[in-house]
Image (cartoon, rainbow, N blue to C red; front, side, top):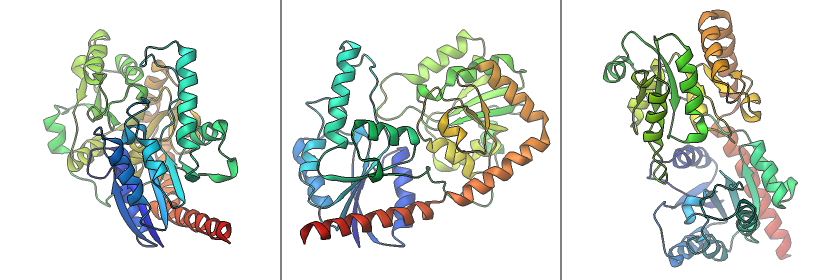
Length: 366
């Protein structure tokens, strides 16, 4: 089987890292060539060329994020040009589905919602798309709500990479971030406001001064909302600026070091689908304290607290720090989860879906 897979590849992006690991696992089962996507604006002819490249294999597999195709603006989106050029069965992995009014288009909320619904249908229900894959129940339900047949939307939990057996020495990173003599709470990954940094800062305000919050990441290349400046301002407003560290984008080795020194990794999302940053922490067998949202609840290996409640988060941090038995129980659950949700398991399910698409195409030709 010859597969063409479109994704970001050489750019700092969670989907790129996910795709790299998935492609490694897929190549043990099929021939896979990557068609690189980009965050840079492109003419429609470039998107059409991507579609033709996807048609050089037996199956076209697209990792979909709006930014890969020019966003949701009707004049800039290249999705239609790409999809119209694909002549092979297409599997679409949906990483996000934006349906809520934000004001970004300067439209009344009801008009923006109607536009996004129409746009999403034109993308996700395009005739070239023959199947969908998602890593969250929320995205599965959203696709079905748009009109995708439920039996054709394959849900699998976000896979977990097998992390290195040995953790790096966190001492150099501890010194560089001025964390000597502190206890570190870490939020991993790009600075995205929905991750609930303000909830973590409110919890920090309630915790003893030995606790420090490390935002281990920088702004996403497509983010123009100045999240780092907002986060620093929030910390100053709450009187905890001296206990906040914003690292900026970290190379792999530095991120490993920051994660290794964490007393706990926080995932205080206000809303979410699946989270690659949370899975990164689980892969490194870290204790995770997460918002009690459906996706986190399904993990069954993290300490939950009510979403948006900084006081409850502070209480969870202190309770977990004082309860060694509970810490050990959670870590055993983490270990079990990581073993059961590998990239190899996802690759096996993905190849089975490719085979189904090819059988359907063959039957349609007869």
